[in-house]
Image (cartoon, rainbow, N blue to C red; front, side, top):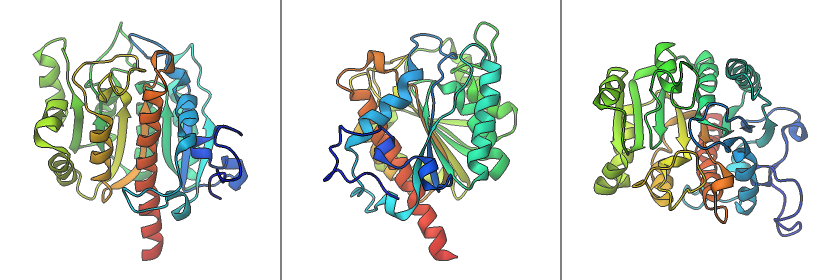
Length: 317
């Protein structure tokens, strides 16, 4: 089942599933790619509101069309993509919420789906990675973000939106030979932040690197680092400059353009993308859906990559 036919039903009418796709229950409870929301933002350290991000992305995705010319693919025809609704996580207990997200992700992966997760804050990346690693072993990670998110604790809390990837390294669920931050920038607490990050195995491509070197060179570097490993891509929408994504909790000047982000992702189409997330969309700070539109197109490119790979694997069987 594909999306609702926009020549028969106006785009602004009907349920706001991602890209107007069928719900998971409408396709028998099984999908190749499950688009799932996690309305949770208890782990933020500055501006709240990302709990509303998933639905804002869905609403902005109404204008997405079924053919992706940039990748020469019709993702919703190549594989069954469905909207799996939201994972309801406890907003008052971070530890319980992390466990809930992990268990729900386990169920989706057990059904054979790859996940395209719409956050929520970046705390949710940890339970998602735990679940993916159960299926694939330690995975390569591409982390698009203005920030490192490898700090130790905030106010003594181990699980926050600034700590998921330190926890993931500590738990052995990441392949430390294939870790990269992309788009980082802005002030840090000290040089030790970079030193500790490097010890964990992360390489860094800053937003300035993207500007100076260009998207093709950056994408080539990332492909070489990843190789054929199972890959998880985690995208904090604040990787984009506030001009392109004002609706986020911790904006930083000097970021990437939405065009640069989309082009780098398209350059990763040959990588073995097993699941992905787009997080930190906070619509209360958005203008004219700028951030949500960028996030919806980002999720569309990631979904296209996964659909193409699923179709290719079936042809090779």
